[in-house]
Image (cartoon, rainbow, N blue to C red; front, side, top):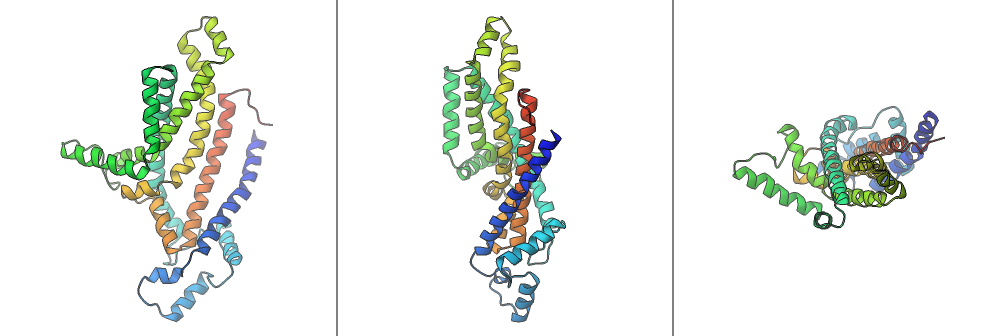
Length: 312
């Protein structure tokens, strides 16, 4: 197992290099001058512009700029913005908000999605099963932007007017309650997909020969479902949850904007607009690392869920 972990970490190196190189190239290709974007409509002294461009290697070719970034990254330096603020300082304050939001969304996704999926599977072919499938189809069809504004109005504004202040509509001033509504909005589409995946996975496993054998032997239904069927059904669900963690972290731009959450999504959007290459690449680098580690944990959980799976 130790050799497998080491091999996977080594394999992650080209993935990390490729991802940072790609996003650096995309930001490098954006039109406009980042120094001019920093000043807005104000005119900057040409001497200051020349000093800044020299300081941040903006006059160098793309590969030279990327080399300077990688060298700094290997030394634990994510660079500084054109305003002189350390990228690690920016990420330290922003990532905590996004991590809280993504963790809330992931818990909701796992509890609601898996719960509804298993319930639908056990009620396969009945009215409740059809109702759950129809509900997930509706949830998948509605854009996150629409879901966010509708729930913000109904559960945030309308409930508060009725005297029930349970879901704050903006900011992070209310502690964990501030993440409930945006967490559900962020996880909405994933909940629908996970519900359908859990249902289909369990329905298929309940038709397997070894399940019919367990039924014929007279084992209790709770043991058949909980010990034999559910354990095998969890393998594709764990895979989906692990892959979705990175998507939740990186896809929170719309949700954080709707609910005015000062997270990494908003910072990424503004950094792309201002062509802050160190900030954009630094954020993407951390997101790629999270995605790689999440997939590594998923692979290790396979051996726990299914003893037949062994890594050489």
